[in-house]
Length: 235
Image (cartoon, rainbow, N blue to C red; front, side):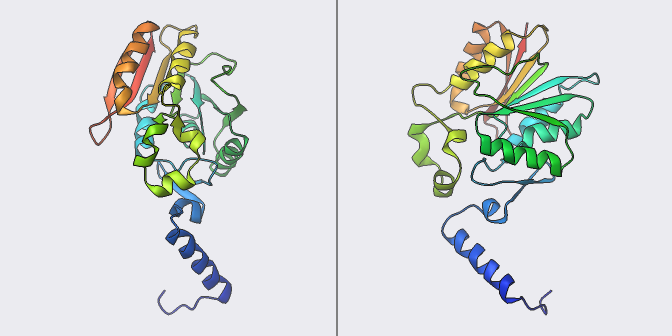
């Protein structure tokens, strides 16, 4: 389209976008779209930009969804990319997604509608309370980066992505996983499972948490050969 001339408004839009990118704003926030599992998801600064590792999490969790109807819970849904992707891959299952952020839930609901996915969204702070219901599969990519590691992240992540979805206190790196392990222990079915993305540095603590709650633990590497996922199975 090299012969096509931009209108004045189009040119202004391109110039404004280029300025935002030069200032370090992530491209996905500038365009308002991030691709995940081959689908476009609306994103804004209230939600994390989906990462390739989280696509691996969805693929891993999807492998545990049986042909029967399953009740799936996504904790800390953000843009809804995990819940929406699982709902589309397994339309016979019941998928619920929760988040503490009202703004994130609004974005996730918009994505579910745009992609025609059946997902129930609820506001819930899992550090204070658990979503009501029984769950066959719990999936989560919770905050897991200690605050002391903030400076090691790229500037565009630190400045633009929501800290609420990224960081935990230095002295509580596994706080969300402790809650997920407890929630799994409360489920009625013996074969209920949890599948979570983790920081490689806390892999050993994931095994300890699993043992503490009598869960079978499996640690799974990502495509970069880093221990990135924990699978807990209620025994």
